[in-house]
Amino acid sequence: MGAHDVWLAGHAKASAHRARWLTKPMLMPLLATALLNRRGIEDSPMRNSTLVAEAAGWVGDVILLNDGTAAFAAGAGAFGVGHGAYIWGLRANRRIERPLKRAPSGRVAIALALGAGPLMAVGAAREDPALSPAVAAYVGLISTMFACAGNLRADLPTKTRRLTALGAAAFVASDSLLATRQFWWRSAPARVESVVMITYLLAQLLLSEGAAAATRQTPNIPHESREVR
Image 1 (cartoon, rainbow, N blue to C red):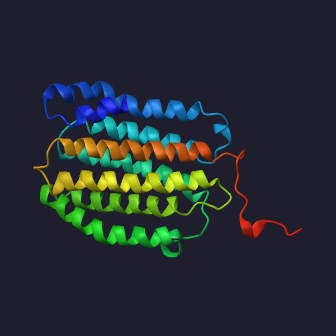
Image 2 (image 1 turned 180 degrees about the vertical axis):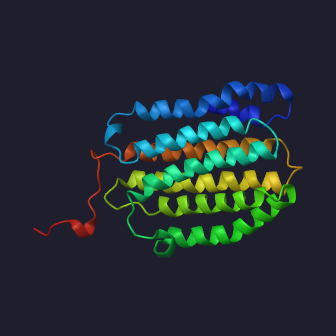
Image 3 (image 1 turned 30 degrees about the vertical axis):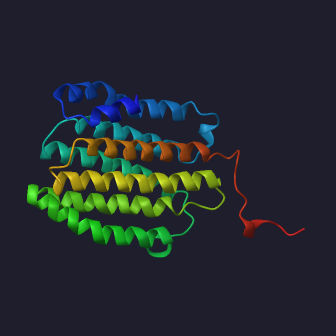
């Protein structure tokens, strides 16, 4: 289903867009169902936040099937709620307090926010001045999510920490390309939308798989906490 929607996204024909009203709304429910059916998922400390984020992603997916500034703003708002949910789950399992100041991923996130935030806010203002603050706030949210994703506690499985960090990075890549196409590259070929969807679906999948792997059944034991016998 994901591959079909990616293929449709790269076609400018009206028939392809109409077909996406069937394919795109199915993506997040399928991902959430797969997560809920994973063995031991009830032990994952990031299950609920991930499911909330996927539900918000579904709302954003549907809204963004519509065209126009209002739809873009509403869709961004839905995804902002999703990033807030991810932040909630990630912060509950953080390794370092105040990751934006102290974690390596936090320093990258600050650079991202300071670099991309003003650029995208200016681009949004060219389209609609009222959209600029919302876009700036969204950049702040996804930057914070990225910082938190690279700051998970060490006793979680290595697979969880790696998949979560990669998923957050893929989300940043997807949203950066989406915003660039929306505000600065209106002449972009239709195939760019396929790339946006590939990176978006990869992000959601990696974050979901990271949450699925974060069970009490396969914990890591930090080196510093091992007893010397």
